[in-house]
Length: 489
Length: 95
Image (cartoon, rainbow over all chains, first blue to last red; front, side, top):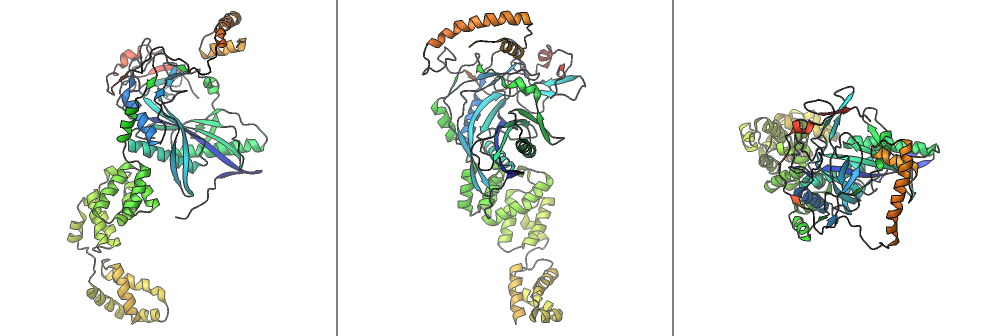
Protein backbone atom coordinates (compact mmCIF):
# COMPACT_ATOMS: atom_id res chain seq x y z
CA UNK A 1 0.00 0.00 0.00
CA UNK A 2 1.35 3.40 -0.86
CA UNK A 3 2.02 5.68 2.06
CA UNK A 4 -0.24 8.67 2.06
CA UNK A 5 0.57 11.86 3.88
CA UNK A 6 -1.35 13.02 6.92
CA UNK A 7 -3.63 15.79 5.81
CA UNK A 8 -6.40 16.77 8.17
CA UNK A 9 -6.53 20.48 8.74
CA UNK A 10 -9.31 23.00 9.06
CA UNK A 11 -8.83 25.69 6.49
CA UNK A 12 -9.60 29.17 7.72
CA UNK A 13 -9.25 32.55 6.05
CA UNK A 14 -5.97 33.09 7.85
CA UNK A 15 -4.35 29.71 7.40
CA UNK A 16 -4.55 26.06 8.28
CA UNK A 17 -5.48 24.81 11.71
CA UNK A 18 -4.49 21.56 13.33
CA UNK A 19 -7.12 19.76 15.42
CA UNK A 20 -5.94 18.36 18.75
CA UNK A 21 -8.07 15.65 20.30
CA UNK A 22 -7.92 13.71 23.55
CA UNK A 23 -10.43 11.06 24.57
CA UNK A 24 -11.80 9.90 27.88
CA UNK A 25 -13.25 6.50 27.08
CA UNK A 26 -15.65 4.92 29.52
CA UNK A 27 -15.53 1.17 29.11
CA UNK A 28 -17.88 -1.03 31.06
CA UNK A 29 -15.98 -3.76 32.86
CA UNK A 30 -17.10 -7.30 32.04
CA UNK A 31 -18.12 -8.77 35.37
CA UNK A 32 -21.14 -10.58 36.73
CA UNK A 33 -21.79 -8.17 39.57
CA UNK A 34 -21.25 -4.48 40.22
CA UNK A 35 -18.11 -2.72 41.43
CA UNK A 36 -19.19 -2.32 45.05
CA UNK A 37 -22.36 -4.42 45.33
CA UNK A 38 -23.62 -7.88 44.47
CA UNK A 39 -26.29 -6.77 41.99
CA UNK A 40 -26.22 -8.18 38.50
CA UNK A 41 -24.75 -6.17 35.60
CA UNK A 42 -26.79 -7.92 32.93
CA UNK A 43 -28.05 -5.63 30.17
CA UNK A 44 -31.74 -5.24 29.45
CA UNK A 45 -33.28 -6.26 32.76
CA UNK A 46 -36.56 -4.77 34.00
CA UNK A 47 -36.02 -1.28 35.38
CA UNK A 48 -34.63 -1.06 38.90
CA UNK A 49 -34.56 -4.83 39.27
CA UNK A 50 -30.77 -5.00 39.53
CA UNK A 51 -30.46 -2.48 42.29
CA UNK A 52 -29.30 -3.13 45.84
CA UNK A 53 -29.54 -0.82 48.80
CA UNK A 54 -25.90 0.13 48.12
CA UNK A 55 -26.60 1.11 44.50
CA UNK A 56 -29.55 3.22 45.59
CA UNK A 57 -27.44 4.80 48.37
CA UNK A 58 -29.47 3.93 51.41
CA UNK A 59 -27.94 5.35 54.57
CA UNK A 60 -25.43 3.18 56.35
CA UNK A 61 -24.63 0.86 53.45
CA UNK A 62 -20.96 0.05 52.93
CA UNK A 63 -19.29 -0.63 49.58
CA UNK A 64 -17.14 -3.77 49.21
CA UNK A 65 -15.00 -3.99 46.09
CA UNK A 66 -15.41 -6.73 43.49
CA UNK A 67 -11.99 -8.42 43.09
CA UNK A 68 -12.73 -9.40 39.50
CA UNK A 69 -13.24 -5.76 38.49
CA UNK A 70 -9.81 -4.97 39.91
CA UNK A 71 -8.27 -7.81 37.92
CA UNK A 72 -10.05 -6.68 34.77
CA UNK A 73 -8.60 -3.19 35.18
CA UNK A 74 -5.11 -4.66 35.67
CA UNK A 75 -5.49 -6.88 32.59
CA UNK A 76 -6.59 -3.91 30.53
CA UNK A 77 -3.67 -1.86 31.84
CA UNK A 78 -1.26 -4.62 30.85
CA UNK A 79 -2.90 -4.79 27.42
CA UNK A 80 -2.26 -1.07 27.01
CA UNK A 81 1.43 -1.56 27.88
CA UNK A 82 0.82 0.55 30.94
CA UNK A 83 2.32 0.86 34.36
CA UNK A 84 0.17 -0.87 36.99
CA UNK A 85 0.12 0.98 40.29
CA UNK A 86 0.51 -1.23 43.35
CA UNK A 87 -1.14 1.47 45.40
CA UNK A 88 -4.31 3.27 44.38
CA UNK A 89 -7.03 5.20 46.15
CA UNK A 90 -10.78 5.57 45.69
CA UNK A 91 -12.11 9.10 45.92
CA UNK A 92 -15.53 10.67 46.00
CA UNK A 93 -16.35 12.91 43.07
CA UNK A 94 -19.19 15.09 44.25
CA UNK A 95 -21.95 16.34 42.01
CA UNK A 96 -25.70 16.51 42.15
CA UNK A 97 -27.89 14.74 39.64
CA UNK A 98 -31.08 12.70 39.77
CA UNK A 99 -29.47 9.49 38.50
CA UNK A 100 -26.65 9.63 41.04
CA UNK A 101 -28.31 8.68 44.33
CA UNK A 102 -25.14 8.91 46.42
CA UNK A 103 -24.57 12.52 45.46
CA UNK A 104 -21.05 11.44 44.55
CA UNK A 105 -19.44 8.97 42.23
CA UNK A 106 -16.77 6.67 43.64
CA UNK A 107 -13.84 7.16 41.31
CA UNK A 108 -10.06 7.43 41.44
CA UNK A 109 -8.43 10.83 41.25
CA UNK A 110 -4.86 11.30 42.38
CA UNK A 111 -3.88 7.66 42.52
CA UNK A 112 -5.40 5.64 39.68
CA UNK A 113 -4.92 1.88 39.40
CA UNK A 114 -3.16 2.19 36.03
CA UNK A 115 -0.66 4.83 34.90
CA UNK A 116 0.89 5.73 31.57
CA UNK A 117 0.70 3.38 28.61
CA UNK A 118 0.42 3.43 24.84
CA UNK A 119 -1.62 2.18 21.91
CA UNK A 120 -0.37 1.74 18.34
CA UNK A 121 -2.52 2.80 15.41
CA UNK A 122 -2.07 1.74 11.80
CA UNK A 123 -2.84 4.76 9.69
CA UNK A 124 -2.52 5.01 5.89
CA UNK A 125 0.46 7.30 6.53
CA UNK A 126 2.19 4.84 8.81
CA UNK A 127 2.11 3.65 12.37
CA UNK A 128 1.23 6.15 15.08
CA UNK A 129 1.61 5.86 18.82
CA UNK A 130 -1.11 7.31 21.05
CA UNK A 131 -0.17 7.87 24.68
CA UNK A 132 -2.43 6.69 27.47
CA UNK A 133 -2.42 9.05 30.43
CA UNK A 134 -4.13 6.75 32.92
CA UNK A 135 -6.89 4.24 33.53
CA UNK A 136 -9.01 4.34 36.63
CA UNK A 137 -11.96 2.43 38.05
CA UNK A 138 -15.22 4.19 38.81
CA UNK A 139 -18.94 3.63 39.21
CA UNK A 140 -21.43 4.19 36.45
CA UNK A 141 -24.50 6.34 37.15
CA UNK A 142 -28.13 5.40 36.59
CA UNK A 143 -30.16 6.20 33.52
CA UNK A 144 -32.54 9.17 33.26
CA UNK A 145 -35.46 8.84 30.90
CA UNK A 146 -36.96 12.16 29.89
CA UNK A 147 -39.52 11.20 27.29
CA UNK A 148 -41.97 9.07 29.23
CA UNK A 149 -43.75 11.93 30.93
CA UNK A 150 -44.01 15.64 30.06
CA UNK A 151 -43.32 16.89 33.57
CA UNK A 152 -41.25 14.16 35.19
CA UNK A 153 -37.97 12.33 34.69
CA UNK A 154 -37.92 8.58 35.24
CA UNK A 155 -34.79 7.07 36.73
CA UNK A 156 -33.58 3.50 36.29
CA UNK A 157 -30.70 2.59 38.60
CA UNK A 158 -29.84 -0.77 37.01
CA UNK A 159 -26.63 0.74 35.65
CA UNK A 160 -25.87 2.56 38.87
CA UNK A 161 -22.71 1.14 40.41
CA UNK A 162 -21.58 -0.97 37.47
CA UNK A 163 -17.79 -0.82 37.14
CA UNK A 164 -16.34 1.41 34.45
CA UNK A 165 -12.78 1.85 33.35
CA UNK A 166 -12.10 5.41 32.36
CA UNK A 167 -9.24 5.36 29.89
CA UNK A 168 -7.74 8.80 29.35
CA UNK A 169 -5.60 9.37 26.28
CA UNK A 170 -2.97 12.03 25.89
CA UNK A 171 -3.91 14.80 23.45
CA UNK A 172 -2.18 12.86 20.67
CA UNK A 173 -5.04 12.41 18.22
CA UNK A 174 -5.21 14.76 15.23
CA UNK A 175 -8.21 13.78 13.10
CA UNK A 176 -11.59 12.03 13.15
CA UNK A 177 -9.94 9.11 11.32
CA UNK A 178 -7.39 8.73 14.08
CA UNK A 179 -10.19 8.80 16.64
CA UNK A 180 -11.94 6.05 14.70
CA UNK A 181 -8.77 3.95 14.59
CA UNK A 182 -8.06 4.59 18.27
CA UNK A 183 -11.51 3.57 19.50
CA UNK A 184 -11.47 0.48 17.32
CA UNK A 185 -8.04 -0.49 18.59
CA UNK A 186 -9.01 -0.01 22.23
CA UNK A 187 -12.17 -1.99 21.64
CA UNK A 188 -10.26 -4.76 19.92
CA UNK A 189 -7.67 -4.99 22.73
CA UNK A 190 -10.37 -5.12 25.42
CA UNK A 191 -12.38 -7.72 23.51
CA UNK A 192 -9.27 -9.87 23.14
CA UNK A 193 -8.69 -9.52 26.87
CA UNK A 194 -12.34 -10.17 27.70
CA UNK A 195 -12.42 -7.08 29.91
CA UNK A 196 -15.13 -5.13 28.03
CA UNK A 197 -17.56 -6.32 25.38
CA UNK A 198 -17.20 -3.02 23.50
CA UNK A 199 -20.86 -2.95 22.62
CA UNK A 200 -21.53 0.68 21.77
CA UNK A 201 -25.27 0.20 21.17
CA UNK A 202 -25.67 -1.00 24.74
CA UNK A 203 -23.50 1.81 26.05
CA UNK A 204 -20.59 -0.41 27.12
CA UNK A 205 -18.22 2.00 25.40
CA UNK A 206 -18.76 5.76 25.45
CA UNK A 207 -16.43 8.71 25.31
CA UNK A 208 -15.95 12.32 26.29
CA UNK A 209 -14.10 14.09 23.52
CA UNK A 210 -11.71 16.97 24.20
CA UNK A 211 -11.16 19.18 21.17
CA UNK A 212 -8.96 22.20 20.60
CA UNK A 213 -7.43 23.79 17.53
CA UNK A 214 -4.17 25.62 16.83
CA UNK A 215 -2.49 27.17 13.83
CA UNK A 216 -0.42 24.64 11.93
CA UNK A 217 3.07 24.60 13.43
CA UNK A 218 2.07 26.13 16.77
CA UNK A 219 3.64 24.47 19.78
CA UNK A 220 1.07 25.53 22.38
CA UNK A 221 -2.34 23.97 22.71
CA UNK A 222 -5.46 26.05 22.21
CA UNK A 223 -8.31 26.23 24.71
CA UNK A 224 -10.21 22.99 24.70
CA UNK A 225 -13.86 22.13 24.92
CA UNK A 226 -15.12 18.84 26.24
CA UNK A 227 -17.97 17.14 24.42
CA UNK A 228 -19.72 14.85 26.87
CA UNK A 229 -20.86 11.29 26.50
CA UNK A 230 -20.80 10.55 22.79
CA UNK A 231 -21.82 6.97 22.19
CA UNK A 232 -20.85 6.13 18.63
CA UNK A 233 -17.72 6.59 16.55
CA UNK A 234 -19.73 8.28 13.85
CA UNK A 235 -21.11 10.85 16.28
CA UNK A 236 -17.63 11.41 17.74
CA UNK A 237 -16.33 12.18 14.27
CA UNK A 238 -19.23 14.49 13.47
CA UNK A 239 -18.91 16.26 16.80
CA UNK A 240 -15.17 16.82 16.28
CA UNK A 241 -15.68 18.21 12.80
CA UNK A 242 -18.37 20.58 13.97
CA UNK A 243 -16.51 21.64 17.09
CA UNK A 244 -13.18 22.24 15.31
CA UNK A 245 -14.88 24.38 12.67
CA UNK A 246 -16.69 26.35 15.37
CA UNK A 247 -13.47 27.05 17.23
CA UNK A 248 -11.62 28.12 14.08
CA UNK A 249 -14.42 30.52 13.26
CA UNK A 250 -14.27 32.05 16.74
CA UNK A 251 -10.50 32.51 16.50
CA UNK A 252 -10.65 34.03 13.04
CA UNK A 253 -13.26 36.50 14.21
CA UNK A 254 -11.00 37.53 17.06
CA UNK A 255 -13.20 35.91 19.68
CA UNK A 256 -12.18 33.88 22.69
CA UNK A 257 -12.95 30.19 23.18
CA UNK A 258 -14.42 29.43 26.60
CA UNK A 259 -13.19 26.26 28.20
CA UNK A 260 -16.49 24.52 28.74
CA UNK A 261 -18.48 21.34 28.59
CA UNK A 262 -20.57 20.89 25.50
CA UNK A 263 -23.20 18.48 24.34
CA UNK A 264 -23.44 16.96 20.86
CA UNK A 265 -26.96 17.20 19.49
CA UNK A 266 -27.27 14.24 17.15
CA UNK A 267 -30.41 15.59 15.51
CA UNK A 268 -29.08 19.03 14.68
CA UNK A 269 -25.51 17.79 14.17
CA UNK A 270 -24.01 20.53 16.33
CA UNK A 271 -22.45 20.96 19.75
CA UNK A 272 -23.86 23.34 22.28
CA UNK A 273 -22.92 24.59 25.71
CA UNK A 274 -24.19 22.69 28.75
CA UNK A 275 -24.87 25.63 31.03
CA UNK A 276 -26.20 23.37 33.75
CA UNK A 277 -22.75 21.85 34.13
CA UNK A 278 -21.15 25.18 35.06
CA UNK A 279 -20.76 24.22 38.67
CA UNK A 280 -20.19 20.61 37.88
CA UNK A 281 -16.44 20.98 37.60
CA UNK A 282 -16.26 21.79 41.27
CA UNK A 283 -16.16 18.12 42.16
CA UNK A 284 -14.50 18.48 45.59
CA UNK A 285 -12.70 15.16 45.35
CA UNK A 286 -11.62 13.56 48.59
CA UNK A 287 -10.62 10.01 49.57
CA UNK A 288 -13.69 7.89 50.24
CA UNK A 289 -13.63 7.18 53.99
CA UNK A 290 -15.58 3.94 53.39
CA UNK A 291 -12.78 2.46 51.31
CA UNK A 292 -9.22 1.71 52.27
CA UNK A 293 -6.44 2.19 49.71
CA UNK A 294 -6.18 -0.63 47.19
CA UNK A 295 -2.83 -2.38 47.46
CA UNK A 296 -1.92 -4.89 44.78
CA UNK A 297 0.65 -7.61 45.33
CA UNK A 298 3.23 -7.67 42.54
CA UNK A 299 2.61 -11.43 42.30
CA UNK A 300 -1.04 -10.86 41.38
CA UNK A 301 0.02 -8.52 38.57
CA UNK A 302 2.70 -10.95 37.35
CA UNK A 303 0.26 -13.86 37.42
CA UNK A 304 -2.31 -11.92 35.42
CA UNK A 305 0.39 -10.97 32.94
CA UNK A 306 1.19 -14.64 32.37
CA UNK A 307 -2.40 -15.47 31.51
CA UNK A 308 -2.96 -12.67 28.99
CA UNK A 309 -3.95 -13.88 25.53
CA UNK A 310 -1.98 -12.99 22.42
CA UNK A 311 -3.02 -9.42 21.61
CA UNK A 312 -3.72 -7.93 18.17
CA UNK A 313 -0.31 -6.27 17.63
CA UNK A 314 1.59 -9.48 18.41
CA UNK A 315 -0.85 -11.58 16.43
CA UNK A 316 -0.51 -9.30 13.45
CA UNK A 317 3.26 -9.72 13.48
CA UNK A 318 2.86 -13.48 13.69
CA UNK A 319 0.29 -13.58 10.85
CA UNK A 320 2.70 -11.70 8.60
CA UNK A 321 5.56 -14.01 9.46
CA UNK A 322 3.76 -17.31 9.72
CA UNK A 323 1.16 -16.98 6.98
CA UNK A 324 2.91 -14.60 4.59
CA UNK A 325 0.13 -12.03 4.75
CA UNK A 326 0.71 -8.38 3.99
CA UNK A 327 0.23 -5.77 6.70
CA UNK A 328 -3.21 -4.79 5.47
CA UNK A 329 -4.52 -8.35 5.41
CA UNK A 330 -3.03 -9.11 8.82
CA UNK A 331 -4.59 -5.96 10.24
CA UNK A 332 -8.06 -6.84 9.06
CA UNK A 333 -7.80 -10.46 10.17
CA UNK A 334 -6.64 -9.66 13.70
CA UNK A 335 -9.16 -6.88 14.28
CA UNK A 336 -11.50 -9.24 16.12
CA UNK A 337 -10.41 -12.28 18.03
CA UNK A 338 -13.20 -14.39 16.48
CA UNK A 339 -12.09 -13.41 12.97
CA UNK A 340 -8.49 -14.34 13.71
CA UNK A 341 -9.58 -17.67 15.19
CA UNK A 342 -11.65 -18.47 12.11
CA UNK A 343 -8.81 -17.49 9.82
CA UNK A 344 -6.30 -19.64 11.66
CA UNK A 345 -8.58 -22.64 11.44
CA UNK A 346 -9.02 -22.11 7.70
CA UNK A 347 -5.32 -21.42 7.14
CA UNK A 348 -4.33 -24.64 8.85
CA UNK A 349 -6.36 -26.66 6.34
CA UNK A 350 -5.79 -24.71 3.14
CA UNK A 351 -3.68 -22.20 1.26
CA UNK A 352 -2.93 -19.40 3.72
CA UNK A 353 -2.79 -16.52 1.30
CA UNK A 354 -5.80 -17.58 -0.76
CA UNK A 355 -7.74 -18.19 2.45
CA UNK A 356 -7.13 -14.58 3.49
CA UNK A 357 -8.21 -13.23 0.11
CA UNK A 358 -11.43 -15.23 0.05
CA UNK A 359 -12.26 -14.52 3.64
CA UNK A 360 -11.84 -10.78 3.22
CA UNK A 361 -13.76 -10.89 -0.05
CA UNK A 362 -16.76 -13.16 -0.33
CA UNK A 363 -17.08 -14.33 3.27
CA UNK A 364 -16.94 -10.82 4.77
CA UNK A 365 -19.29 -9.46 2.12
CA UNK A 366 -21.80 -12.19 2.91
CA UNK A 367 -21.55 -11.68 6.69
CA UNK A 368 -21.87 -7.96 6.24
CA UNK A 369 -24.87 -8.47 4.02
CA UNK A 370 -26.60 -10.67 6.54
CA UNK A 371 -25.48 -8.53 9.48
CA UNK A 372 -23.82 -11.51 11.14
CA UNK A 373 -20.75 -11.85 13.33
CA UNK A 374 -18.21 -14.35 12.13
CA UNK A 375 -18.98 -16.55 15.13
CA UNK A 376 -22.46 -17.00 13.62
CA UNK A 377 -21.19 -17.67 10.10
CA UNK A 378 -23.44 -20.16 8.28
CA UNK A 379 -20.30 -21.54 6.65
CA UNK A 380 -17.95 -23.34 9.00
CA UNK A 381 -14.21 -22.76 8.91
CA UNK A 382 -13.72 -26.37 7.86
CA UNK A 383 -16.04 -26.13 4.84
CA UNK A 384 -14.58 -22.77 3.91
CA UNK A 385 -11.09 -24.27 3.98
CA UNK A 386 -12.24 -27.07 1.65
CA UNK A 387 -13.56 -24.49 -0.77
CA UNK A 388 -10.28 -22.57 -0.71
CA UNK A 389 -8.38 -25.79 -1.28
CA UNK A 390 -10.56 -26.67 -4.29
CA UNK A 391 -9.64 -23.35 -5.85
CA UNK A 392 -6.00 -23.75 -5.02
CA UNK A 393 -5.75 -27.25 -6.49
CA UNK A 394 -7.37 -26.07 -9.70
CA UNK A 395 -10.36 -28.30 -9.18
CA UNK A 396 -12.68 -25.33 -9.62
CA UNK A 397 -12.15 -21.81 -10.93
CA UNK A 398 -12.71 -18.68 -8.89
CA UNK A 399 -15.91 -18.03 -10.77
CA UNK A 400 -17.30 -21.45 -10.05
CA UNK A 401 -16.16 -21.08 -6.45
CA UNK A 402 -18.51 -18.15 -6.07
CA UNK A 403 -21.32 -20.38 -7.28
CA UNK A 404 -20.33 -23.15 -4.86
CA UNK A 405 -20.15 -20.57 -2.08
CA UNK A 406 -23.76 -19.55 -2.73
CA UNK A 407 -24.91 -23.18 -2.65
CA UNK A 408 -22.98 -23.76 0.57
CA UNK A 409 -24.82 -20.83 2.07
CA UNK A 410 -28.19 -22.24 1.07
CA UNK A 411 -27.68 -25.88 1.87
CA UNK A 412 -24.90 -25.90 4.44
CA UNK A 413 -23.36 -28.81 2.53
CA UNK A 414 -19.65 -29.31 2.16
CA UNK A 415 -18.10 -27.95 -1.03
CA UNK A 416 -16.68 -31.28 -2.24
CA UNK A 417 -20.14 -32.76 -2.35
CA UNK A 418 -21.57 -29.75 -4.14
CA UNK A 419 -18.83 -29.74 -6.77
CA UNK A 420 -19.35 -33.43 -7.44
CA UNK A 421 -23.11 -33.56 -7.44
CA UNK A 422 -23.47 -30.50 -9.63
CA UNK A 423 -20.63 -31.48 -11.94
CA UNK A 424 -18.81 -28.21 -11.38
CA UNK A 425 -15.33 -29.58 -11.62
CA UNK A 426 -13.06 -27.45 -13.69
CA UNK A 427 -12.11 -28.63 -17.14
CA UNK A 428 -8.37 -28.94 -16.80
CA UNK A 429 -7.58 -31.61 -19.35
CA UNK A 430 -5.38 -29.81 -21.94
CA UNK A 431 -6.33 -32.17 -24.75
CA UNK A 432 -10.05 -31.76 -24.30
CA UNK A 433 -9.70 -28.03 -23.85
CA UNK A 434 -7.62 -27.72 -26.98
CA UNK A 435 -10.21 -29.63 -28.92
CA UNK A 436 -12.97 -27.36 -27.73
CA UNK A 437 -10.98 -24.22 -28.39
CA UNK A 438 -10.13 -25.37 -31.90
CA UNK A 439 -13.82 -25.81 -32.62
CA UNK A 440 -14.54 -22.31 -31.38
CA UNK A 441 -11.78 -20.80 -33.48
CA UNK A 442 -13.01 -22.54 -36.57
CA UNK A 443 -16.52 -21.27 -35.94
CA UNK A 444 -15.26 -17.71 -35.58
CA UNK A 445 -12.85 -17.59 -38.45
CA UNK A 446 -13.55 -13.92 -39.23
CA UNK A 447 -12.71 -12.81 -35.71
CA UNK A 448 -9.53 -14.88 -35.71
CA UNK A 449 -8.39 -13.04 -38.81
CA UNK A 450 -9.18 -9.70 -37.23
CA UNK A 451 -7.18 -10.70 -34.17
CA UNK A 452 -4.24 -11.75 -36.24
CA UNK A 453 -4.28 -8.45 -38.08
CA UNK A 454 -3.78 -6.62 -34.80
CA UNK A 455 -7.13 -6.36 -33.04
CA UNK A 456 -5.79 -7.95 -29.87
CA UNK A 457 -8.70 -6.83 -27.76
CA UNK A 458 -10.61 -9.76 -29.27
CA UNK A 459 -8.70 -12.11 -26.96
CA UNK A 460 -11.29 -11.50 -24.31
CA UNK A 461 -14.02 -12.47 -26.73
CA UNK A 462 -12.43 -15.87 -27.32
CA UNK A 463 -12.03 -16.48 -23.60
CA UNK A 464 -15.68 -15.61 -23.20
CA UNK A 465 -16.68 -18.11 -25.87
CA UNK A 466 -14.65 -20.86 -24.22
CA UNK A 467 -16.27 -20.12 -20.87
CA UNK A 468 -19.68 -20.05 -22.45
CA UNK A 469 -19.37 -23.37 -24.17
CA UNK A 470 -17.78 -25.02 -21.11
CA UNK A 471 -20.44 -23.66 -18.78
CA UNK A 472 -17.78 -21.64 -16.96
CA UNK A 473 -15.82 -24.72 -16.10
CA UNK A 474 -12.79 -24.29 -18.35
CA UNK A 475 -9.63 -23.75 -16.35
CA UNK A 476 -8.98 -20.05 -17.01
CA UNK A 477 -5.21 -20.23 -16.86
CA UNK A 478 -5.04 -23.19 -19.18
CA UNK A 479 -7.56 -21.57 -21.51
CA UNK A 480 -5.36 -18.51 -21.75
CA UNK A 481 -2.29 -20.55 -22.52
CA UNK A 482 -3.93 -22.70 -25.17
CA UNK A 483 -5.68 -19.75 -26.79
CA UNK A 484 -2.43 -17.84 -27.05
CA UNK A 485 -0.71 -20.84 -28.55
CA UNK A 486 -3.42 -21.55 -31.11
CA UNK A 487 -3.93 -17.94 -32.10
CA UNK A 488 -0.24 -17.52 -32.78
CA UNK A 489 -0.18 -20.47 -35.17
CA UNK B 1 -7.00 31.03 53.45
CA UNK B 2 -10.05 33.09 54.14
CA UNK B 3 -13.58 32.67 52.96
CA UNK B 4 -15.66 35.48 51.59
CA UNK B 5 -19.43 35.57 51.32
CA UNK B 6 -19.42 34.54 47.67
CA UNK B 7 -17.45 31.41 48.49
CA UNK B 8 -19.85 30.54 51.29
CA UNK B 9 -22.81 30.92 48.96
CA UNK B 10 -21.10 28.82 46.33
CA UNK B 11 -20.33 26.00 48.75
CA UNK B 12 -23.87 26.14 50.11
CA UNK B 13 -25.22 25.85 46.59
CA UNK B 14 -22.99 22.88 45.82
CA UNK B 15 -24.19 21.19 48.99
CA UNK B 16 -27.81 22.06 48.22
CA UNK B 17 -28.15 23.92 51.50
CA UNK B 18 -30.27 27.03 51.52
CA UNK B 19 -28.74 29.88 53.54
CA UNK B 20 -30.16 33.39 53.85
CA UNK B 21 -28.00 36.51 53.95
CA UNK B 22 -27.96 36.78 57.72
CA UNK B 23 -26.81 33.19 57.95
CA UNK B 24 -24.11 33.83 55.37
CA UNK B 25 -22.78 36.59 57.59
CA UNK B 26 -22.48 34.40 60.67
CA UNK B 27 -21.24 31.37 58.69
CA UNK B 28 -18.45 33.45 57.19
CA UNK B 29 -17.31 34.48 60.63
CA UNK B 30 -17.55 30.97 62.10
CA UNK B 31 -15.91 29.17 59.22
CA UNK B 32 -13.08 31.67 59.04
CA UNK B 33 -12.25 31.17 62.68
CA UNK B 34 -12.31 27.39 62.16
CA UNK B 35 -9.99 27.76 59.16
CA UNK B 36 -7.66 29.92 61.16
CA UNK B 37 -7.43 27.22 63.78
CA UNK B 38 -6.73 24.54 61.17
CA UNK B 39 -4.15 26.66 59.45
CA UNK B 40 -1.84 26.30 62.39
CA UNK B 41 -0.97 22.98 60.78
CA UNK B 42 0.74 24.88 57.98
CA UNK B 43 3.56 25.65 60.37
CA UNK B 44 4.73 22.08 59.88
CA UNK B 45 6.75 21.22 56.83
CA UNK B 46 4.94 18.33 55.11
CA UNK B 47 6.78 18.44 51.78
CA UNK B 48 7.90 14.85 52.01
CA UNK B 49 4.86 13.42 53.74
CA UNK B 50 2.22 11.56 51.76
CA UNK B 51 -1.35 12.52 52.67
CA UNK B 52 -2.77 10.04 55.15
CA UNK B 53 -6.02 8.62 53.89
CA UNK B 54 -6.49 5.96 56.53
CA UNK B 55 -4.95 5.13 59.88
CA UNK B 56 -5.42 1.41 59.27
CA UNK B 57 -2.39 -0.15 57.67
CA UNK B 58 -4.49 -2.59 55.70
CA UNK B 59 -5.52 -3.04 52.11
CA UNK B 60 -9.04 -2.94 50.88
CA UNK B 61 -11.18 -5.97 51.66
CA UNK B 62 -12.65 -7.46 48.51
CA UNK B 63 -15.43 -9.87 47.55
CA UNK B 64 -15.87 -12.53 44.89
CA UNK B 65 -17.65 -11.64 41.65
CA UNK B 66 -21.01 -13.21 42.43
CA UNK B 67 -24.58 -12.01 42.08
CA UNK B 68 -25.88 -11.86 45.63
CA UNK B 69 -28.15 -8.84 45.64
CA UNK B 70 -30.83 -6.97 43.70
CA UNK B 71 -34.39 -7.94 42.77
CA UNK B 72 -35.76 -5.83 45.60
CA UNK B 73 -37.39 -3.16 43.50
CA UNK B 74 -40.28 -2.58 45.86
CA UNK B 75 -37.94 -1.89 48.76
CA UNK B 76 -35.66 0.29 46.68
CA UNK B 77 -38.46 2.41 45.23
CA UNK B 78 -40.08 3.03 48.59
CA UNK B 79 -38.36 6.40 48.88
CA UNK B 80 -39.12 7.62 45.39
CA UNK B 81 -40.66 11.08 45.61
CA UNK B 82 -43.54 10.02 43.37
CA UNK B 83 -45.39 6.75 43.12
CA UNK B 84 -44.43 4.39 40.26
CA UNK B 85 -44.03 0.63 40.08
CA UNK B 86 -40.92 0.56 37.95
CA UNK B 87 -39.04 3.84 38.19
CA UNK B 88 -37.92 6.57 40.49
CA UNK B 89 -39.94 9.57 39.42
CA UNK B 90 -38.40 13.00 39.93
CA UNK B 91 -39.15 16.50 38.68
CA UNK B 92 -38.04 16.92 35.09
CA UNK B 93 -34.30 17.42 34.60
CA UNK B 94 -33.38 18.13 31.00
CA UNK B 95 -30.21 19.32 29.36
